[in-house]
Length: 104
Ligand code: SF4
Image 1 (spheres, rainbow, N blue to C red):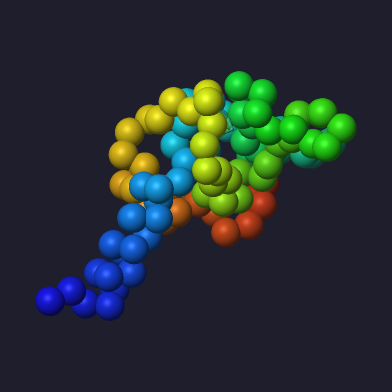
Image 2 (image 1 turned 30 degrees about the vertical axis):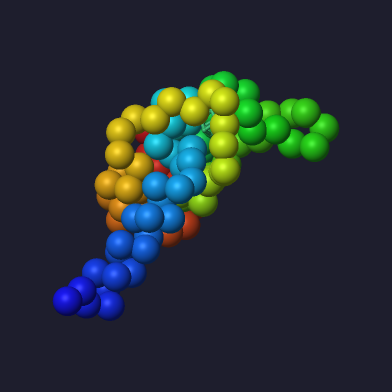
């Protein structure tokens, strides 16, 4: 018999399998972005297939710690990097929980 935790993990895995997570796509790129005048940087993510756009057409870039939230129903440019369930589970464990600043 499955425990409640196992059931929740199983449901999360099923949900992950049904959606496209941009983090699991080869086009989702990690980009260091300078923190002005500090010599340090933030981490951002961008879609190098050009699919993330603001209303006026400019490219949209997201904070790295939010990357696991970029889930969509479909994308004609999606190229997966492996099993999304396993990848997303590991990613969620390793992501920072806020926008951190890094030293070069
Ligand atoms: S190509 Fe599509 S699935 Fe891949 S990162 Fe861009 S929007 Fe996400």
